[in-house]
Amino acid sequence: MSEKFKRWQEKSLKQLTYTINLFLGFSIAILGFEFSLLFKNSFSPICFEKFAFSASIFALIASAILGSVCVVNRLIDFRITAQITRKKDKNNSDGIDDLRNKSNKLGNRTWAIFWGQIALFGLGTILLVTSLLFYFSSKIF
Image (cartoon, rainbow, N blue to C red; front, top):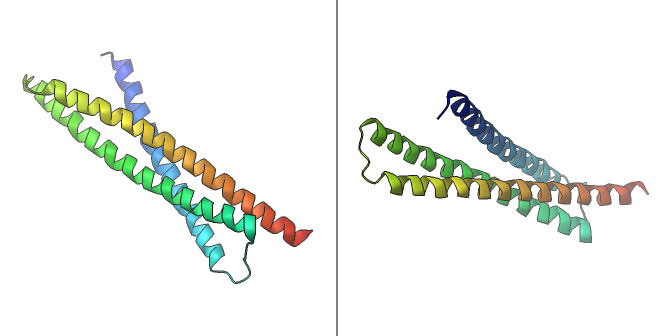
């Protein structure tokens, strides 16, 4: 493996970790905002607004859960990768193919979970903005 490839792979892994954590933080922050709105007596959405607002909460909770699962999945993958590296350093190839297969599956799972996290975050955000637009447009007009 070239030195340039290793550097870019390391940057890519760091960027993925940063992005997962960023959207996890955004999800939790928006949930905090939504719950603060719920506890205000002046905020009382009706019908579609209530449905969109509630669906937003569920989507953002699911996004936060997926983000947490993704972080744990990556930790397990890193642990297996460390085992592979240790075996290579000791010139011990016993079980290394099984470990590589597990690592590849975990890596693919990470990306699937990550895209699910992003999709649910986007859905939750769109539903929140939609519910707030309907709520405040009925108050203004």
